[in-house]
Amino acid sequence: MQYLILGAGPAGVNAAESLRRLDRGATIRIVGDEPEPPYSRMAIPYLLMDRIEERGTHLRERGDHFDAMGIDIVRARAERIDSAAHRVVLDNGEALRYDKLLIATGSSPVLPPIPGIDGPNVATCWTLADARVIHDRAQPGSHVALIGAGFIGSIILEALGMRGVKLSVIEQSERMVPRMMGPHAGGLLQRWCESKGVDVHTGAGVDGIDAGGVHLTDGSHIDADLVISATGVRSNIGFLDGSGVTVEQGVLIDRYFQTSATDIYAAGDVAQGLDFCTGEYAVHAIQPTAADHGHLAAQNMSGSPALYEGSMNMNVLDTLGLLSCSFGSWRGVEGGEHAELYSPDDYRYLLLQFDDDRLIGANAVGLSQHVGILRGLIQRRTSLGEWKGRLQRDPTRLMEAYMATTQVI
Image: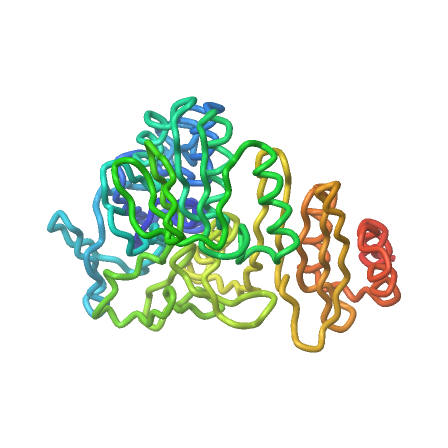
């Protein structure tokens, strides 16, 4: 059996390793278009904080790990898939055959249509090459402008704050992390960042970027030696034209990770799969989902059907020492009820969303002890019974609710 995996991130690596355990005699190849060994993008902030060296970003510690497992790493980019011939054409002219193919090509930063966005003083923060640029140029005392205060932007914000730069953050929405939390929670994050010396501009548009910094639509100018764009990512699906693989926001997969094309599967940031909470199909571009996808996709590729229960949208942030999190359907559902705690003086916030007597989504700021409990209650689809009313009166009683409703008798 010849397994071919496009993408050397967590989804691709986990799939390759799982396939090796499931099929000892198979040929397994990973195609990755970056020169470094497979690494974790989520480790890049720690590299920028000088907490780890580049080797610390690598997904596997041993340099000979993939050779020892009999997994070949091919340094190239997939240009097109010929699904009828079961082969992938690479940018180096080589064509690789496959019996089963996994598309795990991940995602790439979206650059907003701003004049000057392609200037020499502008960077993204997505690859190790990007990280080297930022590490060299974001020196203590330098002026850095960060465009985008979503989840990715806020992770970068933490790293930049640790580097001692003079940081300005520009977010076009009316609050920070608008896709992760509502006005109260997002407002607390902004006020916290400002208390730490970060200049935050929400509801702000960018007119252009020049060598001196960023021009806002209100006519003001932000000085910047370095501008970092963090305005979201998009699944890497452009090479799939003509392949027979159906795409929307990402590659559509069924609950067995199969695409619309025979013997082709997809996983990770590129895959548009079942959402655990909503029942719809969505791209969840987060590393835990990618890792889970890789393992389960491998099972299905190897002939051991594994039905996927769906991924849950979840994010956990440490923003200059203030922990926040978002799980599931935090906006709630029609006809649902909620419970809310808002203590702005203490930087504490908790929002619980219910559908009947089940917890289906949550936001929390400054309440780190509840992170695991919130995830557990949502993923278990726990029937809270009388504890729903108790949580509505006091949302902080989550541990008691968890113990009372999840214990096996």
